Amino acid sequence: MEKTIRIFGKEKQLDNGVKFVSFSFTKDGEKFLQVKFNQACDNVPKTSGYWLITVDTEDVSLKKGKKLDNGERANDILWISNIIKKTKDTEYEAQVASKRKEELEEALG
Image (cartoon, rainbow, N blue to C red; front, side, top):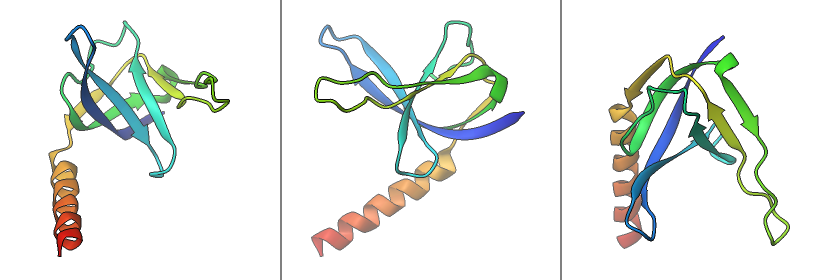
């Protein structure tokens, strides 16, 4: 079964200067999942921002997050092995930017 989900990519940098994009997903705005792609997936988004990706549920698996030293668990990981279609979600990005601007103006008075 095909599903379309919205993922968020954020550019990060390692101590040695190497940059990469880390992805996350949330269905309800509460619980965040890390999104990772295995090596067989050749249609991976390469830039930060919001993306709509269509995947077959057969090509997706969920792995529990590691137990941390403080007793809590890291976010679970959504592993994706194939993306059927990907589209940059510029409309949603504009909505988020507008909402952030309104919140900032409200906070500053």
